[in-house]
Image (cartoon, rainbow, N blue to C red; front, side, top):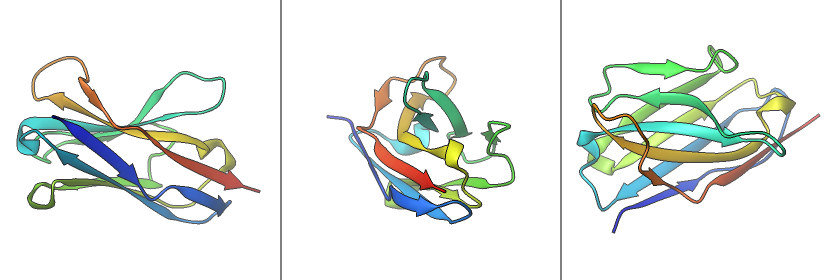
Length: 119
């Protein structure tokens, strides 16, 4: 059974930093691209960062470039999202998703972790 479990969310102030983790089980992580997504109230889910199966390519949404850093430790079956200089518009539920390398869609999702950035 595939499971993705996010943690690390919380309530922070504008300008603060926060680190999210996603622990993956039930699949061979090194064969999967991993994405971090977020969904704000009343908005569609958007991808904020993605890291390739081998860690060689990491991409970010324009809205988080220079502030968010995504990394992976396959030996620990964990993917991270380090967020800094947080803004109120970063508020939302953050999800990690897994996509088999060289495929088009994300197949597996975590339950999400809430991030609230207060001004």
